[in-house]
Image 1 (cartoon, rainbow over the protein chains, first blue to last red):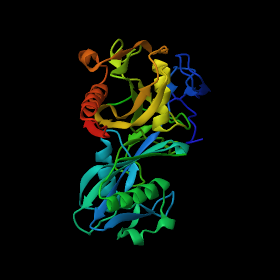
Image 2 (image 1 turned 180 degrees about the vertical axis):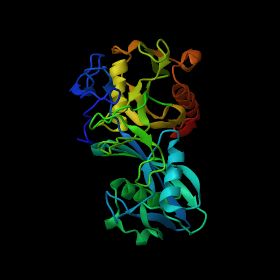
Image 3 (image 1 turned 30 degrees about the vertical axis):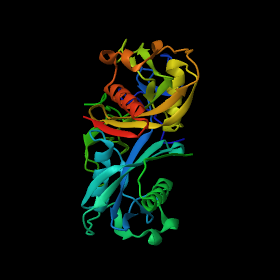
Image 4 (image 1 turned 135 degrees about the vertical axis):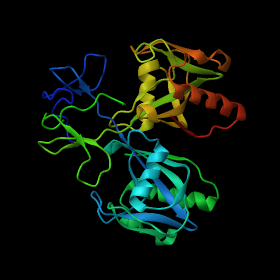
Length: 181
Length: 181
């Protein structure tokens, strides 16, 4: 449903079977019939920023699938060994090569269909010179009126941008929490 | 460092090698020399609630390792196919068998050392009858003065409880965001 199914045990390489484990669990897992390893699959965390310079927001044109050529906020999968804010900062470095100061947590969104939790932080850009990495065709600043709403790569990016501009008009930033099903 | 290392490919069972993939990645991953599958390992999301009845908060005494016999808020690993709030509600059902109404997002904490993100929601208990599952020895209500601070299972639970009582005194609940390193 979400990802390529587990076929072999990560511990010993034996072909797994899908069944409810005997430990009181209620969900089917990939269980190894040889070494009894139970393989869990859980949602992934995607972290990113809303980088802002004066009236404009930084978007990156994707040079990778999915959604090649569409516009996104800098974001990617959180890694082991970092906090959500550190991951968001790393992705902003990698995808935009921007100079910025991290701001507060802004949006937390479950994307149930794909098994992901997306979190965006506000970030204050220090200047308008960018050095995008290989995953980005172009990094560019947009005013609210210039945002290419029909060319936004992911629904969580659109929802985050809409709430960002609304909060800015209202003069106060909230933490936004929503589920996308 | 965080979990049992991946030894075999989930797709074909071949022994993996750890190296930086050729796709522009910068981190070592378990790569299959036979079918080229790259195995990513990422942080897990733990979701739970702060269940409240009048002046008291519900804690569960753990019947499982780690921290057997210590007190925790109802919480557990988020599963595929649910939102963070749905996962928090499910864990509250499973661990406490409580009747409640879900409230707002309350705390978001990265626990970098173990590769986890913990999120707690406020929840309003409807009565004081509980039916804890097999992972819980006992579910009990505590006033702030009664909380067994030295017997709390996880640091994120203590941090969440402290902030909950502080916000309640202040008369307004915030979304709290912190990193635990």
